[in-house]
Amino acid sequence: MRALLPLLALSCLAAAPGAARAQSCDTLVDRVTAETAAQATERRSDYASFSASPDMTLTLACGGPDLSSVGAQFRGANPPDSYYDLFGHAGHAVTGIDAALIAEAAHKAQAASIRLRHSNVDLGGARITCSAMVSPDKGPLTLCAVIEHSDRS
View (cartoon, rainbow, N blue to C red):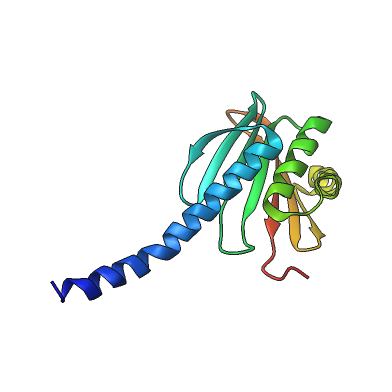
């Protein structure tokens, strides 16, 4: 029995980071849901996907402290303002950066991505990245993500 106690203690310590990560991701999922009203369609310990409308979805990747990201996908080449609003609120839920600033940066990155296929805008502690592509089975797609920097300066 005494030999089992150290093994039990070690196994609890080894499981703790995963449990903390899962709790942190659960918290982020709850924040994204609260800020966007999107419905979580899949949840894992480090990832979640959401449905916001028939043409808009969100994905959440939970990293270590200050290293998570959230993406917004739109089926089409010219997203409506509601796409940027949704993306801004999802980004705010993950990064704490003002939703309007994220939406504005996404407009800039998306406009440049039409010419370049991919574009980035740095925004105080995060990077906004957008891509424009054509999927053989889904047609034109607009993809934007806000990715936290490890350096929050």
